[in-house]
Image 1 (cartoon, rainbow, N blue to C red):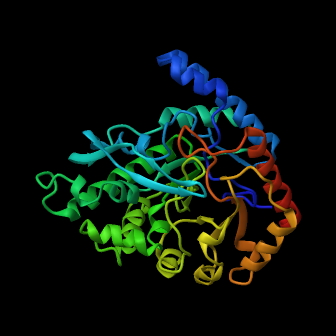
Image 2 (cartoon, one colour):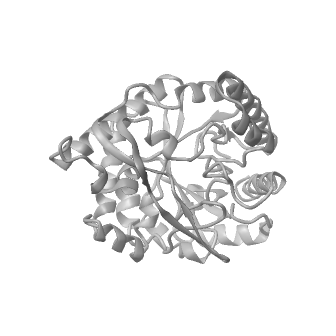
Length: 367
């Protein structure tokens, strides 16, 4: 088993909010709400430890959304008055929509204070010996992907290169200051690099004026700039999926379109990748993974409660190992269980059964 992240058995980050916490969010504010969150996080950290995981998150219990709660706290970015972003998700029953407030870049982007610093500090002090605290934040790509060119005030950034420089600089400062708080495991969550494999998503970007055929190269460049001075001893991974909202998805397509540049140019230590159904394509793109980089196979779905077969998971790991060395592979769910406060359509018992299955399978595969 690995002693540094990503671990052989790992998970993406978000976990289903307990019912008592959901009730607290509706009725409590300020210190009372934070105390309720603290109690829920202590319990969910204990459950992660009991499941056999070597890393733990706070389940993103203090957030409503995996990414917007972070993005709105960047200096220079705010919510657009009376305007929403609409993201259409799909499932077997039809379509649903995720509609957060739209974002606007109204001033030069900067980091005023480290985001989620107190949240990470609480997690760091809660996990206990032998468990690594993991912080998840959206990648800088998500600021652009969600808003696009129309979200950037041209009077603030008449030259878009200045926007990109400021965005990466703000992220670099976030990485530095979170590292100073003792964070050794940081994850950049990034749906954009998976979405861009879908021709329909690229058509949407082209329609709003972006260079969709090369946007993944821009995103890789900006993430690398954000990580150029990462602290020594910090592991940084990225998680890429095709949408996860109330057990629904937004995009389809294998990783073929971005794979060669992604694996060879993105300066992260590991890649959490969605591989839970046919929408994700095959393992062939993993042939581009260079030595030294880790791939965390997201073979266990968070969208349904039915438990996967251990034998099927082992067979799929063997299939992936045809394209990248087995020692470079790990196992996880395909995404979080609750990317937004609403959560996916399964129970907490089913959620932790899946996490225990991942731990047991990893122990049997890697020892």
